[in-house]
Image (cartoon, rainbow, N blue to C red; front, side, top):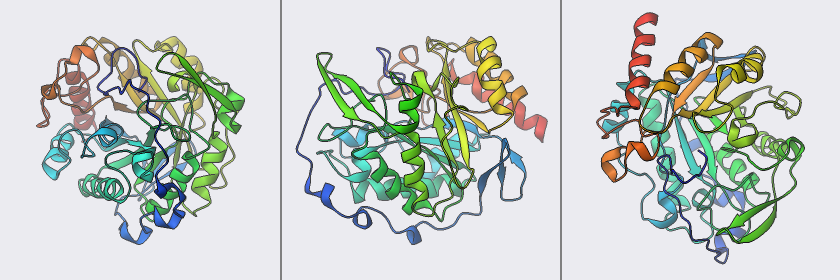
Length: 373
């Protein structure tokens, strides 16, 4: 999710903080990785076959679901991982919307336990693994997304232009080693690249980021090829989602700069909002539709502001016609102290009561379920 004045359901930590890297940063990879044996194999399975995702029976499936925001920001400053409940009852409310997938945004520093985050390391990792198990127990596929990352001693409290070479490859090696025996997950390698070029997207470069609106910081990014290689170095064959430029709105160069994947399990990640650009059927037809004939396309985020649903009601039928998956931003309840007009909040409470914006997704998925039933 792009960080703008409207927080779209995400809390924004505006004060830049640089803290000494904790001693944990020098730990070996094995010390920060949960053993893959701790993640039990799920009856669910998902992989890329041609331009489709297929399940354990070889049947074509689309991922239709929601983003569960919170684990990317709560851990930075509080003694909790999730914003709101993560228990089976809360997942049961999600399932009542006829979803089959949940995308979980994550924080690099919290997973690795570095840079002074309040809840990080083993405690954070254990709760993420538990939540994945809970989601899968309800028959849901899980997308694990590197949402917030930052280089060096900068704390990952916001969204930088691209994954960082300092920590992001280590994050993905750890993540892949943890989940490589779990075949019901997908990895979204970096949430929303922006202010970089396509060659940088593929191979990395020196990028800049403005801290506190005044200090221009330069850092080395990790390109998508480096992140793909990090996952594959562990033996994980997990499907990998790659979002393009312009906060994952721009997929124009995706095919030309496609990374090499020995397992041929790459997925186009695409985000679209009514206020983000690249937000009309004419552009989707030119840049996304043709990709969907070659690769699986998953709209990891979509939505609109103002607590309305006009944009969503236009996008979902288009995606249905083109076989494109989609997940609505975001399953954060407005009774927790913010308003749907400030950002796309799907629900009023964690019992699953839809907002005026969320009702479009809920009713559309119910209609699809009825037609498929």
